[in-house]
Amino acid sequence: MQNRSFLTFNTAPKKDYLESRVIQLFNKDVYLTTAAPTASMTDYFYKNADCDEMIFIHKGSGTLRTFLGNIDFSYGDYLMIPRGMIYTMEFKDADNRLFIVESHRPMY
Image (cartoon, rainbow, N blue to C red):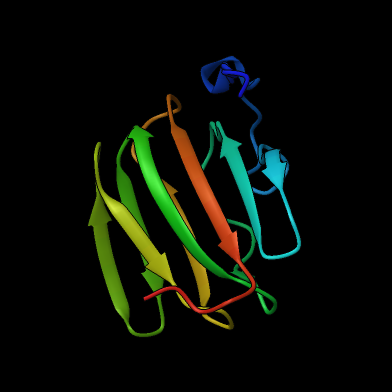
């Protein structure tokens, strides 16, 4: 066994939420991704039609907006987004760090 260290906080910040995603590890079932978006998703909505998403908030706060309602989030929160859910994320500031798990199998 070999220990590994992934310096995920070294992910370069980018303005766009989707462009800021960097895949760290993956296999046929799951993608482990980090992201450091600096701006809110104001120009578009997003839908992941292939995977359920779990987003852990390492740093930052804001609001997840869906057609089912709005969810405020901050440090330490988990956001579970089922596949096919249309959403947008509004961040309160530019210093955000996210850990995202995209799973091809359902997450409960």
